[in-house]
Length: 388
Image 1 (cartoon, rainbow, N blue to C red):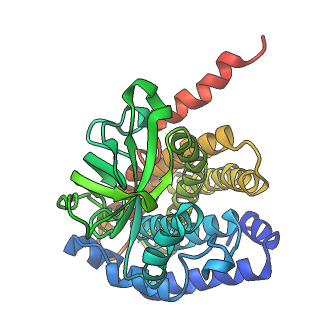
Image 2: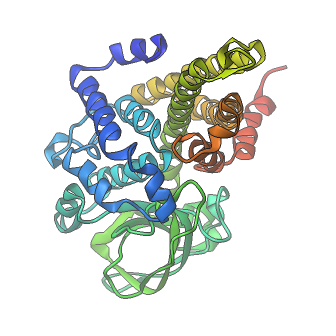
């Protein structure tokens, strides 16, 4: 663990440090040894996600009154970083379920909470959020899924795509447009239950490096969400989604840090053992400096990421800090994990090492919760407003 991470953890509570230690141990036992097999089998490790639920790793931010730990966003971010050292895709699946669990408890009606929360806590029902669509990804306000008010509820029709956990989810916080003339103000959010009529799950995406992500989509055809399934009414949902995106960008950045840290560890151990031209690979300046550059970029990415996390915990304006963290961490991880592979030669691509899988997941991270281009646009807006 780097000094920067140790200092960050030192500011957390004892309960939060205990959570991080539990997550680290869980990942070493249940994730790392099996992640490559999940990828080769092209499946979502639902049984391991449920094992994580048994350890209550999905209740970080869930209030204690609902059976959760009631801890900080920073604790959740560090948990994600530790698990992503072994598998980004599984870490993302877990945090999606954690977010959905907290979301149902925070925004759900008493009837909805009673119906779904106990099953989400046990892992019987997996949750996720349904924002993206086949024709609307980063442009969230352009969603086409419609919600029409009817007696006793809302009729939903439309399609969602690129949804983490969609392959296995039993409940989805689904965003739908109630009045296109209102634009983003017409968007509402509804708890969609997969076992109700009108929900049709699509086959999971064959996503290289990310099968444990559970990415896929679903279609709603005459689906009726009862009134007690409304999570946010039009006028509130879009704003709440944008507020949550800062946290998502920060923990995706943290997961990129976790993948690179693991890649550096593997490459360093390998190059200290492998010999070429009569000396250890690590003694060749050109390759050693690649790993040095990777270490420097890792520290820089952690500084940006941990700053965003602290702002989110304080309720500060984390829009730009989260965008900077995600932009830098994803681009950096993509380049520096490749450098770690290069330092190991062709052996860096072998399945017994996690580096090729981490590289694929770093590319997935470049699109998750806003592409690099979207981060550039978001940061660029601040330049247009800057005083000259």
